[in-house]
Length: 467
Image (cartoon, rainbow, N blue to C red; front, side, top):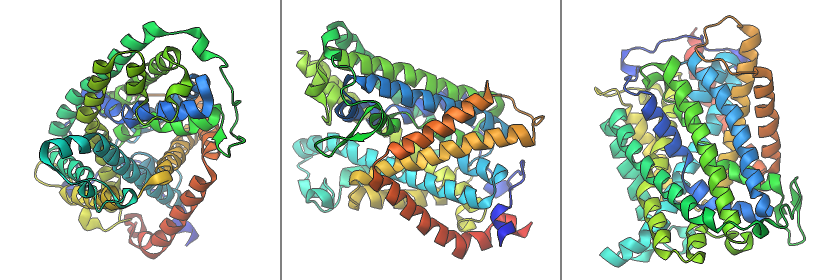
């Protein structure tokens, strides 16, 4: 049994015809996919949550979370070009670290992607529900989940179904529409900075760090500090890992994956820090701390209600890009695990146009139930825990392969790999322990459940078990 837990997948194993995805994507599609996943509810809402935890030092929280994610992105770029097949951190772990750790990482990614898709769908519903009620008379009970006193969140269910239909039409078509919508989001953030930055006042940054650097429990019982904010703000940065799941569908993976991963991450770090500086400098952080729409609130405080409405409208139009990117990544993780036998292999078949129809429908069913019926609450923070585990695994894979196979083909080599890998592992570990204790507990419970499933099904049905 011990040997089966440590067995590894061959570094190169081409899938057979009916389980091979079509190569239709180029680097502009990948950059748009990454930016589409990264720029979403995080920057639109979490700057208010972060400001409540760190004060003006939320700028530093953004920089720290961005730096850690940038290091992780470099590790991802090296591993993605070295192992250009679908599956992202799960596949790298299977090739390098062994089956048991690969299962844990794959199971964590399922948690991450499912919760992100569901949470963003519910967040989008919050913007769309008033419009549906005023224009079409939709009853509130059909636009709110049970946690809000309703029956089922139909707008959230509807947007997931629409994204699933789009993905079923083809990966390239989905990526092209995604690229257009990403431009809408970027334009909205540029407009925000253009209106907020001229109102910058240095007095709004005082005191800069009222709650300290490390996570600490304040007198009101709330965990605050620069790192406590960074652990939550981290949600606003990840998403570039969805690009790695597209490796098998990329025309020139050796070049395009590196450009997509590093390019999208670099662009978003610049955008986020600019938005954070403009927001904190424009008005006192106490005015928008914990606001569900901090950027729009800041614009209204500056006497720009029309610009605030434009920002909100842009969110309604463009937030589905986040759903699309993470839905895409989720379906590819499921697909690869099914192809490896960890999940039923019948799910790992593709249609004539090269898209995994069965796994897309399977994914849609899961996230639709979560978005429509399940109260997410603080459990959404579990997405961060799953992502941090995946980032640590990818950095570890990069370092192990630098020792085990130093001469292996790498079309992209991360600079200063031991420094980059160490920052990723230690930084993500520190962020994980900066998460709320309840999040860490639920993450452990999720993985215990996953290990039971692996012991009963995955270990015995894995393709690697057949040699």
